[in-house]
Amino acid sequence: MPTSSWFAAGGGADGNAARKETVDKGAAIMLADAAEAAGVRRYVMVSAMGTDRADPKSDDVMQVYLRAKQAADDDVRSRDLDWTIVKPGMLTDDVPTGMVQVGELERGAVTRADVAHVLAEVIESENTIGRTFDVLGGDRPVKQAVAEL
Image 1: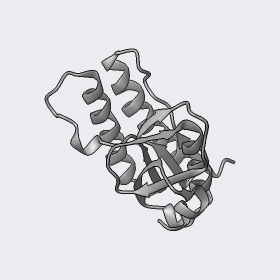
Image 2: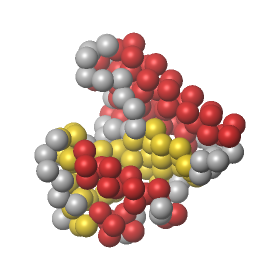
Image 3: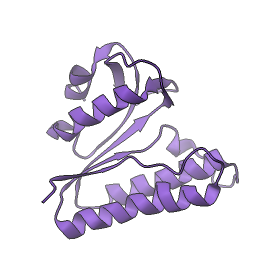
Image 4: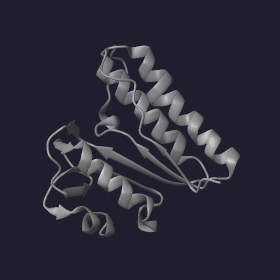
C-alpha cells in the first residue's frame, strides 16, 4: 500500500479556464478523497504563490487558476490528513542550484528541479506536516531550508 500521495498536476498554460477548475481544483480534491479512502495519511500538494491575492471576480485565466488552487488548498487543509502544501513562485527550466528560501515570501522564481528537490525533502520531514509555505530560489541548501521550517 502506498504511504503517501502527491498532487503536482496542473491544467496547463493553454488558456483553458475550465481546465483550471477540473484539474487544479477538482483533481486535487479527488486525489485527497482517494488518499483518505485508501488510508494513505501523507498528502503533499504543489499549489502556487499568490492564491490568497486572487481577484474573486476576474475572468482572467491566471485569476481562475489562483482561485482553483486556493479552493484545493482549503479543501486539503480541512481534512484529517498529514498534509503539506508547497507554493512555488514562477517556475523556470534553469539549471537547479540546490539552494532555496522557504516560508512566507514575496514574488520570485525557482527552478522546477529545485521544487522537486524540496518535495523530496518534504515527504520525509515530519516538521512540514500541517504547513503551507512558499518556495523560491535562495541561499539555503534545500535540506537545511526544509529542516528550518
